[in-house]
Image (cartoon, rainbow, N blue to C red):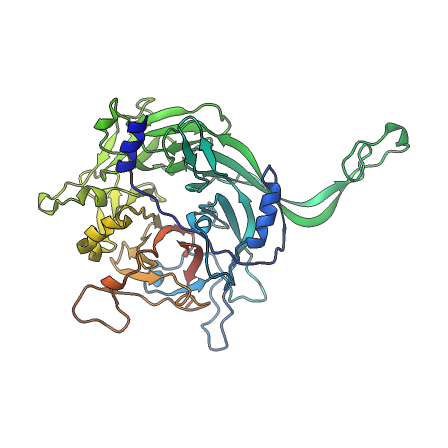
Length: 517
C-alpha cells in the first residue's frame, strides 16, 4: 500500500486552491444549520462574507438598459465592458489557509452561487431581486447561508490525515422549493438540503410552547393549531453521506441528466451512485494496473453529458480524453472514443507530459463540444473529431521559457479550471498575477483582465492587461519577470444564461457583469 501512495504522489498533479475573504456583515436572516456542527456554524456566521453592490450611475450615465431577458453580446465582455461587484473592504489584513476558496459553482438558474474553501465551509450567495426604485442596478449577490460541510478526519488504518477542504460542489436541478447540492472532500461526498422557513406552528394541544409533552389531565379543551409568520430562517441539513468508496483522492463529481444518479472520480477509479442509496456504488471505470509500478497515468477530471445520461467523459494526466457509453458495458474501461492530439517530436521536452496533463474538462451546454484546460492552453474538441482539437487557445504561452523555474516552485502542477458562457460562444479560464482570460470563438478575439481590489472598484470598467516578453513596452504592460505566481485564478464559474462571472482569487470572491450601453 505504501508503494501505491508513493507512486501516486509522484504521478498526480497537485491541486492548489483558493478562498473567500472574511469580513464582518450584518446578518439579516437567521441561519439554522441542522446537525452536530450547529453551534460552531452560528459562531462562524460572525465571519461571513459580504458582497457590496455597485452604486447607481450618476446623471451622466448611460440610458436605462432593456429589462427584458436577454443574453448580452459576449463581445462586450471581450472588450472589457464589465462592471465589478467587489468584496466590502475588510478590517483584517491577513487570512488563514482555511480561508482559501477551493471551488465556485452557480446553480442551474444562476440565482444561487456556492463557494467552498479549504476549511471545509460552504458559503451560499443568493441573487437579490432587481430593485424597482433603482432600475440601474441589477440584482446583487448577498450571503444566503453558510455551513460547515466537512471536518478534518484521520484514517487510522492507513495512518493518513483527510483534509476538510471542499474539492467540488455540484447543484442538483431544483424539483421543489428546496435546493440540494453535493459537496466533497478527498474521501466523502455529502448531499445537503437548503430550505427556507418563514412560519412556525403554534397552538398544539398536547405540546407546550417549548415542545414538551403536556400532562393529559391538564388538557380541558381542543384548539386548531395555526401557522404564524416568523423571521425568515434558512435551514441547511445533511440528507445523505456517501463514504468509504474511494481509496484515492476524489477530484470530480458530476450529476447525471437523469437527476437520479451521479458519479465521483478519483485518481484511478470512477464510481456511479444513486442519490438515494449511500451504502453501495458501482465502479464504472478502473484504470489501476495490477502492479502499481506500471502506472503511467491518472484520472484528472470527469463529467456527464448534459443531455444523454449514458455518456460521460474523463481526462487523464497524459492529455487524453475518453468518451464512454454506459450502454456498451457495465465497466467502461474500454472507451467509445479517444480524443488525443498527436505530439510534435520536435517540441518534446522534459516538461511535455506535465504541461499536457488536462486539469479540467467541461461539456458545452449544447453537448456538442468539449472544453479542456492544460497548463498552457485551452482547447475545444468536437465530439465528431477525435484526431485533433477543433480550436486551440494560448492562455499564457509567454511562460514556456520559464517552465524550469515553475517546476522548481511547483507552480507547473497548478490545476486551472475553465468555463463556457451560456451560448457556448465564449470560454474563460484563469492565469497568474490574478489575471483571467476570455476567448470569443466567433471573432477569435481575446482579452486579459485582472481581478484585484485596486482595479475592481464599484462600477469601474476593467481595463485589458497585456504581458510583455521583451522589446518595447507600453505604458500599462507587465513584464513576464514581474508576474506574481502566488496570485492565481484557479477557479471560475459563469452564470448559465447571463454574462455574470464569479472569480475566486485566493481568499477573495469577485463577481463581474456586463456594462450596460
